[in-house]
Length: 306
Image (cartoon, rainbow, N blue to C red; front, side, top):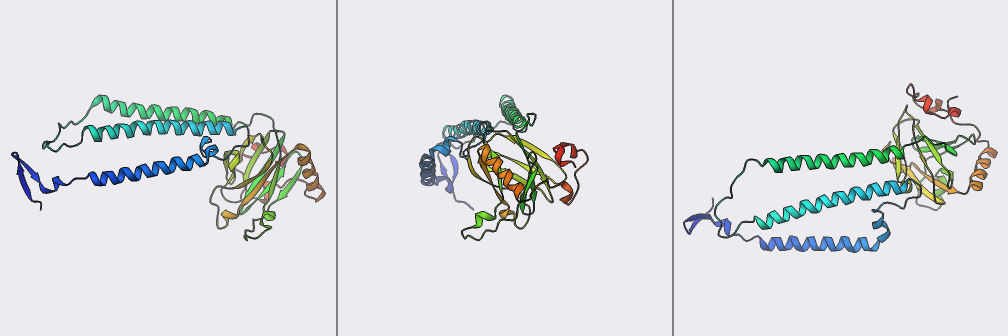
């Protein structure tokens, strides 16, 4: 298949004379362009780069999540640089020379090296697991008494909010996304007091949903028959977007809501407004397609167990 020539007593195939350097130069050029583009784009959004490209957090837990995220990326990039560096060194140091017509010495194994690349990954995974488990435990800690408890109920394809202490509720309807002004008014809005501890009690009426406010830097699944909980302390006033983060059916993309973080006086005024509209009492779990799994009822606030 290949023509062969003899050079200094060695048999050399004709295709061995092919010079791959032009292709290598092209790859190097494209790599340089890609790196330059990344640096330029990251420079345009310096704040986002400093946050690890996460949204700006607006709760007390946000800094913990940001630190874990950035720390993980730093560790991964350090390992990547080491591996890329060793790979480049091997490519350069052990590249084939023009006058090298013999294969290098072949080794079946190298015990120290194999021990190294077995122990180091185990150690890395253990460190990642330790910090992840530590922060997850803190993020899901509900041992402190909340000032406000909101039972967030996911349903196809909207949200209901039970404000437990105020004994009022709000029923959400599916967002109507027409692209026209006024669509925002069809999205349910949850009110929270700024600077106060809030506990979310998450339940589902039908299928698996996921409660996610991107700027809280936390989300948690809502499972049929189960009760999940977590707490936050909002630190900034404003209106923040929320959505379902679990594919839950045909209109999943329209399962949206707003979170409005306001001063306590405005929060109390909204609770009073719900009462004046006759939205008193709490929506029970009897509206669910299936009942709660045995033992889950005790995880609900006492007002919701009736």
